[in-house]
Length: 560
View 1 (cartoon, rainbow, N blue to C red):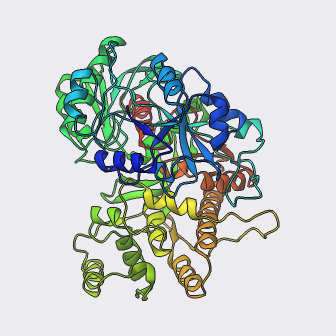
View 2 (view 1 turned 90 degrees about the vertical axis):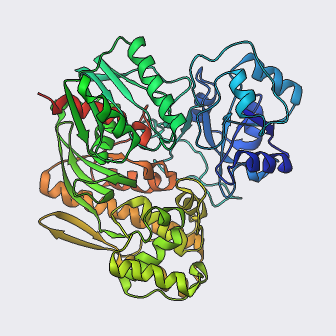
View 3 (view 1 turned 180 degrees about the vertical axis):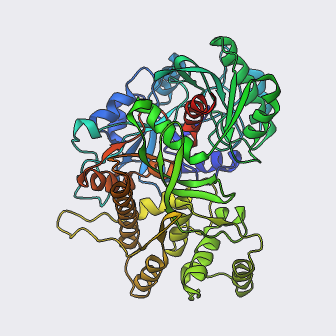
């Protein structure tokens, strides 16, 4: 770890500058559960996680009176907290006497340093001092991260407009991993059927891989974003380690359909030594992973799968991510999706969500009004509109994550990001949840269009209504909350239409958008009230960290 005093704003700022991590939340280690409760609200389920043998980081609601620097998690209502899990941690926290930021010992997006020599070589420019140990690290394992979604009902704290943990119905007080690593991997997921020996290579971001044998799926620890040679080497060496540990010689290799993913290229390079290879559609893998995580039997039949995330390669070659599937392990049908909208500049639009907001407004309404939130130079605005008009460097996307980004920028919450999903996270944090005396907001209008290709959610009415509220001076908090209600309503309406067509009454929710606590708290009760059984992730992340499990079970049924 790289550590500093979590209450010292200057120290936290220095750590961020050196680590090149300007805004992404940092984790804090505290000495005791009692100390944690001085800084955060802690529910029974969160306490169980914190004090479990695995000692993961748990995302807890921050108390306003906490003296931990707000630079630890800027513009965030939640603090990632863990308790000490080694004797050295206990001694360090006892001697320091205050909470410590404990973030991974690496530069951002690189693998963590594994041994003392590597740490001294790679981290000398980051750390002022080194506390070394003679206990060697055998394999790199990041800290695991969990959260407890509050999907039963809201409870409120009189001094806060934000969700506060309350007493939940047992079946809804489910904890979910965001990152499954130290303490959990490589503990296997037991499957409800026997599988072949398979290697599933996972996705590009938040990569994990999965190897299977008999009735077990061994999901790797968090490998990271496959964006550099060091991470690829970590991925390859860990695959070889798992194959040796679990005596697996894969006869099938599964990989994401995206042709440019490093994990996909690795998989294709290994195909000659294997009997079969299977490309897997990204969102089908999300839903299959959720089914496997819930012990879903192949005989239980298909479900309605709602897969919402930032990006995934579609069967039509376009970018998917706001998907409604009729799916099981054996296959899927795309039953509905968000309408395709432009990403001016491609990847640049993800890093600068104001480009998405301008592109969406222009494509949907034919105009981009002058707004403080979109106050960019006239030349850049003209270039963005030309990209949309001409389709130059302007891919089309149906991704739910991009919709959150565009609305975040439009409302002035976040125009540029420095870490993945920052705009969406800050939009969630900005939402002003109505108190018990206020009427619950209705969502914004949206359109539903049915065609031979399935249901398409049209967004023109939503963006026109947002523009009206902006013009009327409605608060950002109210608009952000109302937008979340709208997304939950979209999901309910589309699921009900698919159910009328298919008779299916089970909905599986997967994809990174479902790390949003507010969205879960709004959509799950709506689906249950409509008579659906709702499947959420339990032991495997709903984000791309769970993709490899879905790939593995799909591959088993894909090869005769």
